[in-house]
Image (cartoon, rainbow, N blue to C red; front, side):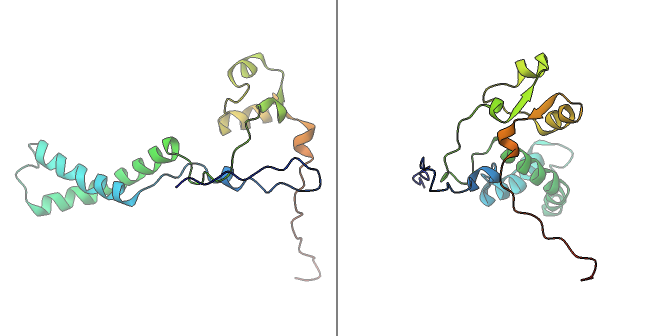
Length: 154
C-alpha cells in the first residue's frame, strides 16, 4: 500500500512532526515465508541427505526441532538487514552526515561522507577516541527532561 508522504512545513510557526518512520528501521517480515523456511528446509534436507533419507515422520520432526531456531534467527537477521522499511509514510530527509557530526580523521572522512551510513560500533569507538564531534545544531535538539525521584518521596 502506498501512502502519500507527510508534508514537511517550511513556515516557522508550524512545527514539523517527528520522523516516526525513521526509528522503525527495516521490518519486512512475513510469517508465511518464515513457516515455509522452517518447514521446507528440513524436508529438503531429509530428501537430499542419505543419512536421514530413510527415516520417517519422526526424523522430519527431529530435523524441524533441531533446525527451527537457527533458521528463524537467520531469517530475522537477513530480513532486518535487507528488508524494506516497515513504514513508508514519512519521507526521510536526504541530508549529509556532515550536518550532524564533524571529523578531522582523513580515513573516516574518506570512508563515511555525504549520505553514507556509519556502523554504530565504528561511530561509538571513534567518538570515544575523540575522532568525531557533534555539530552545534545537533546539540540544540529539544529533549523532554526525565522525571527525577526526590529522596523525600521514597
